[in-house]
Image 1 (cartoon, one colour):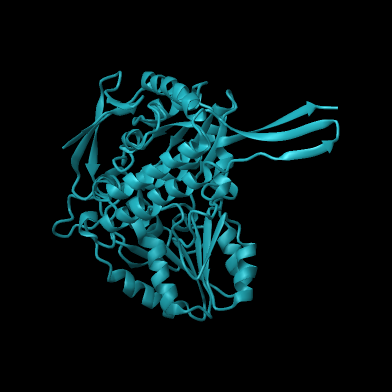
Image 2: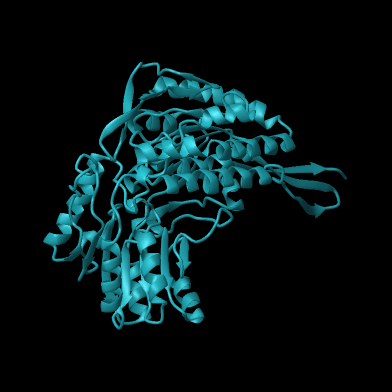
Length: 479
């Protein structure tokens, strides 16, 4: 049983309230750690510490700032085994997936933005010979990062590196359901040489810590990943202090398989798209559309492959692990029952896994529905679990129309051997990302974000720095 406090001003400390909560392993329902539960007073302490650290960080030479962030990347790689185990224990993902998160995602992000930290530049504007006019890009100050439970270190490392590279101090609020992979980032920052108070970690309830961060006048920007209703509430509350916002609010991606697709690649890629991290990924591909000429063949092969997937604990690297919590498992099972009532044809799965060794965990068998129509809840809403719907289509136009008939617009994907079709369909799909003949393709250099109700702003790539910088124009009369 591990014990974790809050990490504020360069040290572990208990919450002002003295309260704690348990981090639970979803593979067996047992507590694996006790974590201090933050409150509004802790947020105020973190903001004060961050404000002082921000001033010191902004006075740090850019070359040194870059080198310090690079050291954070090196420490993450060094500690990959411990961090991957922490990431797996309370989120349920496989150890393999967690190790990839640490080495190839989190460390790579810190490395990437370390390389950009000393390249933040303004420009000179030639107005006239009597004026010298130029722009300066300056940090916001203190930014708060409210992350979800479906990959703590993955989510934290998406926004913290650009915020730090831009010269800000940060306060991280991880979700209570899963947080252990990210909880040590403050300690890692201190070891790397960042000023005390530059990286603070305050776990706790969204209704306390999250609300306090959004309302605090000393916080100048909020980065949030989560539900649409919570994102809307953050927008309303942030208006009082005009905070800069970056919001990713979920997705319900369409995965389109055209008649000329490589079926072997499409089947395997669609398995990866749908069931990675048990479907608990915002850009997963749960809405499968297959051209009617190959639908039966694709569906048969896809279902057979789904039934071959091994369900089990993440520490055993089973292909499909548990859902993050019992409440979330019950929600997913409820969505499955709704699908059955509405007439969707259950092709496989559709129940809680109760086999030997799994009964105490929060497992749902990988589930596939056929004969699904667009008005059914199981297609229209984001299930966020190991549930896939398969629907046929007759033309490119019909596939595009069905893909876009959603409030979400985070990602979509397609499989085709026709390069012209790939460009036409990618251009017509209403989403911030489009994958072609692969899923989750792209890298840290590629911006990601949502259309429509999936959010505002872009993360990853050089554009991510703009989330944490503000532009100043200086006009100097010299004539």
